[in-house]
Each structure stands twice: as C-alpha cells, then as structure tokens.
Image (cartoon, rainbow, N blue to C red):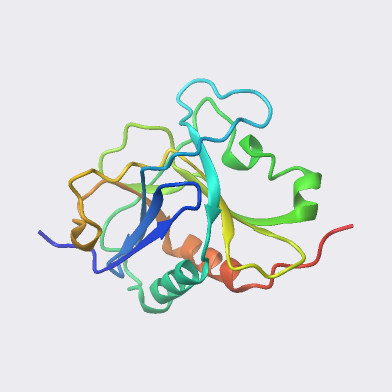
Length: 192
C-alpha cells in the first residue's frame, strides 16, 4: 500500500495534535488526534450538521512553516488524487463562528482561513475548516488555530505509515501557497 512520504505531527499546547502529511501530490492532508479543547461559539450555537469547534495554540510555528514551504517548492503540478471541495451546510463559516471577521478581531490578529477545505476519500461529516491566526504587533514563535470538521486520525494509524487512501481533509496546492506566504510574512502592525 502506498504511504505518505512526508508527515508532520504538530503538538497543541492545550492537548492533542494536528497531523499534516503529503506525498508531493494533490495537497497536504490534515487530521486531528486527541484534541481536548473545544471552543465556545462566539454568537449563537451551530445547528444542523455543524461539527464541534476546537481551538488552541501551536507552540512552534517554524516546523509547520517549513513543512508547508517544502510542499509548495516540490509538489508536482498535476494532482494525482482527485479532490472534492467540502460544502458548508446549515452553519456559518469558521471565520464567522470565531468572530475573526469582526473589525475588533482584525485589530489584534491576522489570519489565514481554509474554509471549506477539499477532501479525499469517503466524507460524511460537515465540511472541514481550518484557521491559523497570529497576534499583530510582535513576532512570536507560536500561532493560534481553530478547526472544525477535520477527521480524527484512526487509532491504529501511525504517522510514519499513513496510507494515501485514508480519507482526509486537504489543503490544496493553491491554498498551501497562500498558507506558506502567510506563515512567512511579518505579523503586521496593530491596527488603530
């Protein structure tokens, strides 16, 4: 069974991990493993098929920045696996669920949102969404994140032998370029 060649396990400060993997093909696959901090909804609770909202902090952003840049620099131009774009139904997009679209939030944070994300394999949940945010005004080694609808990595799957056929949320090549640019950019001044 073919396996994903490049895997990055990103520990989350609050507990759990985000797992990123690619084989220089269709995009960067994303799963969660054991996330513990569920975030309260900012305005009204979700309804319908909305997935739980998780949030927290990635302590060290450098490894993720290098991993995404490596994918962008070396990925093949022709995607090997067909991607499907997730569809957000019966709930607000992640930036609205977390108030990152409010003027007050933009004063203090910059963000890169992937909403909805592409998917690979069987998918019966809410559309996956991922938002990475950084505090304005000073360089920090970490970053914040919010995630919803991401699949949980199966307990029997080890990161060094993840099969390419495993259903996953995917950061497409185009969005990987945007994320790489965001992670390499200065955080920006505090807006007045």
